[in-house]
Image (cartoon, rainbow, N blue to C red):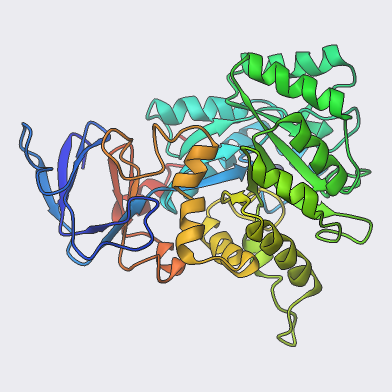
Length: 413
Ligand SMILES: [Zn+2]
């Protein structure tokens, strides 16, 4: 079915923020890829929309994953293995991963870094209707110190001039965001996650260079020291925010810093993913040490009123791009959040943080028609988000049959 003009009736709508699902169904009209009206009069106002009755169904906004890496194959273990993938295979893999994400109900994703701006080219193909995938926001090459975390992607900078040059290069490549690697990471050999990279002055240079180009900064932060510097430098989203110290992740919590994070206009993107979901309990059914530390870390942040957005770091080993919902279920467990809070973090709140709330993240007239048709109420059980009956993206109607058909041979196009 094309996206010209249709009216969904008899379904109940969760628009992206409300505490509960309304009792009554509400018609929703889509024309030319956008939601044009919601409510009893939605079918009026010119034209003859095709009516699609969905009794008993629930509509929610399409999901947003605020941190993925399309370039990374989650089946590979190391950066060296990733870099060794032949180019044609890499591009085909990226296209297949993007398609799988859309089919899983992810209608928007922020790509938090790659080495060759390939995700920007894929974004152009998706926007032109030549490839299937979510709306993409791209960071490009992460800005890092010489030899630092993610330096294998080419965004190394030592001096002020080099920092500005790396930022300019990402902007010229069409990046929507700038990714700043404020601490070491787990994935890069020789890097230590708890150590800060860059001093405060350098981070400020990066944030200011990004701001001059109208871009916000997403800062990768594990260690508490680097996290604090990124907050002071004025970044908009804090990726991971692991509060890592000498004894590992979640072992250097800092109440003053959390209070400062809550005071500022920023969001934590904690990358709680399907991999975390596999680390909740040990073989005896006891909470793991990792779960205890990270649950404590996230719950303290929550109690400080820090705003969260949903994210997975998809592409790292064992974290598939289509598995956002498993990440959301894990997020609810770790942070002890209600389904509605998790769902906001994956829709309206993520859109706000990513500065695209005038385009997506809610069911509201004027926004892109990005929505999911579900068999049940996700505010009662997030698991109903798995395998939506229909994914609608920019008005394009993708039911299960259409997604199955598209998946065959569609990935490499
Ligand atoms: Zn990442």
